[in-house]
Length: 196
Image (cartoon, rainbow, N blue to C red; front, side):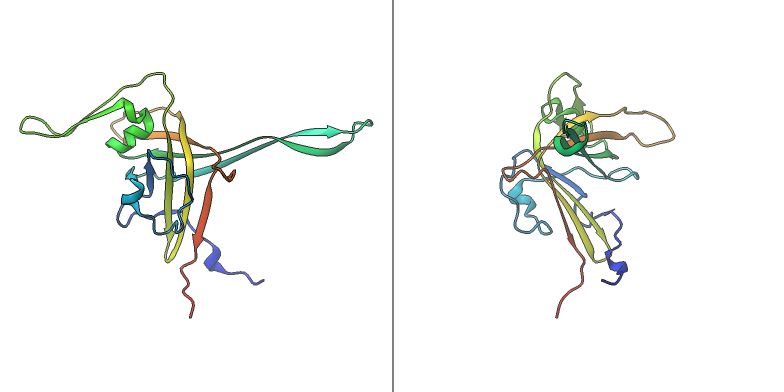
């Protein structure tokens, strides 16, 4: 098979209408039929806004145990641990970004009025954050990439730095859990080349 530079893709955010990172508190139990044209209203997906310039990082961890014969030669490896995580930094201090970082039940919003602007209050406490379904949308020219996480939970939050010379970032790690088919996430691509 010949090389094809159309298969070389960059992970740029697809935020022509919404942000590139979307989530819903209602777990989506069936894989959407068209990951490239998600019905955001029906799925009740909310937009997490801008992401920092480091982008989105997918990490896969596989650990194995060695099975040895009597002579101690390795004759088989058995999967002992598997996990998939996604990491990014929210670049907006918005309601949805703060909910992802602190937890949905730990952020309150008060709409602006004649005496104050929109207000957010976040609580930092020892509790597990909610499971959500997630969509990460990217594009490179006409090509598109979608990562779909049927069941993801923010399990780590990194340091927040408040500095005069940089934006406040909310860095998170999302752990991806298997759906009923045993898949922790799906990556779909569309090269954008239309057929005849």
